Length: 282
Image (cartoon, rainbow, N blue to C red; front, side):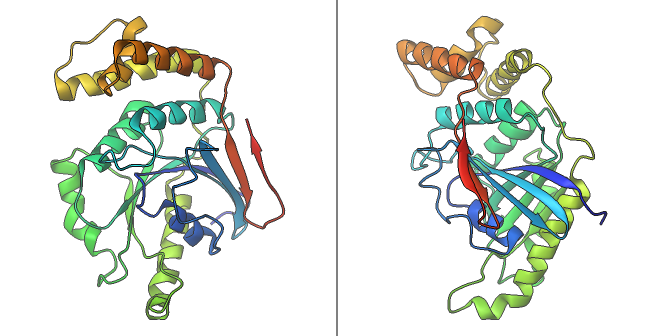
């Protein structure tokens, strides 16, 4: 790999799928808390900054849509946080990473793909699927072999690559999977370098982009649920309404989100992998 590259990457997925463990795997350090409890409370996103093999990595950890109401971050908060995160990324994005646990392909997987890749980034940014908890599989990419065609044909999800990994590096069973852990770390780093855009995807005019984005999200919702397509001025309100809010609540939340987007109110916790800096930006 060429030296000195910089990669801005957004990692997303529902609560508990192993996003923090994936970040720890990438940097080979226990820097990310393996819990989504703090994300979405004080800080709406986290930025992990660090170097690996001569390259600079900026990893944005954000929440996705959860399959059930048990998720720690509600759908309307996840959508709002994501819009605000995009507004704050002045340096652009090179790659998306969607994270899921090995197992069945549930509605949350499909919904997050539609929201992030199709709805927000309009298939303009490459996307990887990283499947965690694959340490017992032989070969380790067995899940990919058995499910890649299904993802494309039944769920209409086309990933640039699927990486099956183990993030297990501590505990009484970790010693059994040292080789798999090393291979997982190498595969993840290589996939990021291979599939990242050469030039980052950047929004030139966020408010113009926001209007197009909201229409796109609404059209995705409408196509699945047979809702009527609405004038642009009603889109934000309608998205919140279809998430289950009353007319008054939908109006209040839509107005609040628009105001926050205009003023770029976004709390990002910055964590330096080398431990030399930790702070936040708003």
